[in-house]
Length: 248
Ligand code: NAP
Image (cartoon, rainbow, N blue to C red; front, top):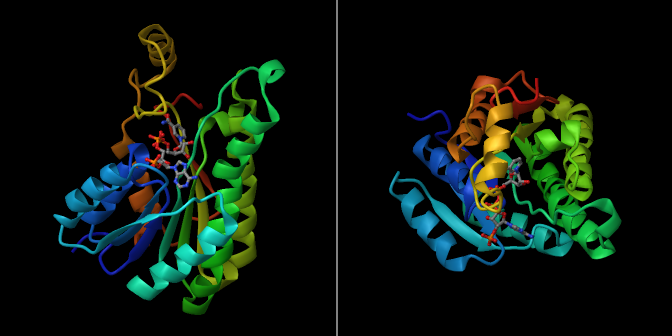
């Protein structure tokens, strides 16, 4: 028996990076999984294949998390296929980094839509079924940058800070229905998102991280296992950093 046996999880952005690690770790712990992607069809199919090796049901959906109507259809499709959604992980996200003086309206809007509006879109449509079943765990992927800011990431930091306020509010709003909502704030995790950093930039970050390494997707996925499982039934409205003590 795994920590998530009998539970159904919906994970946005499961085709790569942290989301892929969560899909594989959740499968290992016995969860049935629906996950989304936006463009990496082939990669998504290979994640499905890898996760199915754990003997669980896994389906990938092409769905734009920033699109309200697509989020509604996605939740309906997942409910029709899996019967329930016990855990929602709003993980999909992007960066469009640049200094404020150069930032375009489009760069601001894209980041806010994909990182923050997506969390509204999915949460909005999953709440009713979760309220009916009087149980649910919502996990929103924030960032340490949403807590302490970062030059060149005003759009990203604003979206990630917004996720924290949203998560705390939802925890207060639906706690009486036994629905929990938490935010996870990763530090620097090795994925495609951070591959753009030069070795010199990575060295500067590593020097500033007390645990002296970048994080791995599995480091974040392990915390998501805790928050999705019955090990955390009295944990809600919290921001849990996974950052090697960077944010300390
Ligand atoms: P990543 O490797 O770039 O993967 C992003 C994932 O999101 C992919 O699966 C991508 O799908 C999906 N995605 C992008 N736009 C989408 C959309 N509109 N609808 C649905 N899915 C979409 O990123 P990552 O590093 O794993 O980051 C995952 C989350 O952790 C993000 O929210 C990010 O902000 C957060 N985070 C990351 C770090 C870090 O250091 N890496 C630190 C703090 C927080 P496709 O494969 O189809 O493109």
